[in-house]
Image (cartoon, rainbow, N blue to C red; front, side, top):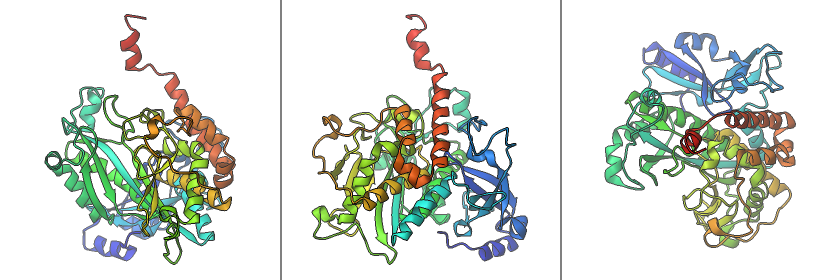
Length: 454
């Protein structure tokens, strides 16, 4: 939640510091979509509501008007949705001149009910379920990405070949190498901090040119909002300096994947840590054990929301710090779920499955839905995995393909109960379209391999 208010905006507009307001909804891919308002008009009326075409919640990465959606289509005429600014998200964007930003909820144009398949509504529904149980979720998502010395325009013009990374070697924790990248990374840290997002640190990651940005944990909805703004902000700041950033889960065969690890814990509405029990195994309360058991029980079903694209599954490779097994373990980075902060009130479970390409609202919601199911059914937690999970035998695997993850999602009774049939059908269609588009494409690898030898 931002501390910047509508009255603060009025004063900044009157003083000439702000002249533009970005009103943004979050689309299915987790991107910011919306309008740039003249600040005076936003203060006159748009702070109450504005509108957008309803296709924004039914397109692919290319903004293609995909057929097969029940909620929106050519037959239905692609009408409007109402965008209602959530003024608790209003903030100044320091890296854009004279600009403020606000995130919007997406409402049905006629009923003014939230559009059930919009990402923010999906997460808010799970947050409300928790509140009904007297609980709230705190979450933190760590974002990794690759930094390139070319601009986005130059990268596109080259066909994304012969790109120059910001580093020539693995820079994990390197101070000297990250000093050479500090022009961009310092601007990112300062920019996000100035936008009301409390930054903890940035660091080099486990591959050449790979970075990580970490911000302070928050309640689930606030953290998802931060995540969406962080990704957009990182791209804008890098672009302004003639650089490019990618959040592809696996940008190159020879490079490590980029993750979005998600830390999660439950607290009472009175801020009592509900995952901590000094007498419990590793300091875990029975509630925490039930929650983790829910994550594991439904691990395959929720994978789509952690890995939504064809490329996402290229990241799951043994020996790369990306998991291949959906097991839990104590402070073990080979497992899909890692226990952190044992024996302290900061005890939490880290989901290591998600890639940097995930939509935070959908990922958080899926994890919460699985955990809630574990609590409601009092599922028993299996013993922690010990050792190298990559080569563990007869243990639960993360789905290896989008096809497998899509099947698990669409057949999930838990997700259909938690999200609703229409929401799951909507995202099933999104997953099917991603697969259909890939299946008919010819890759460079196929041509190079078979042009002469086939």
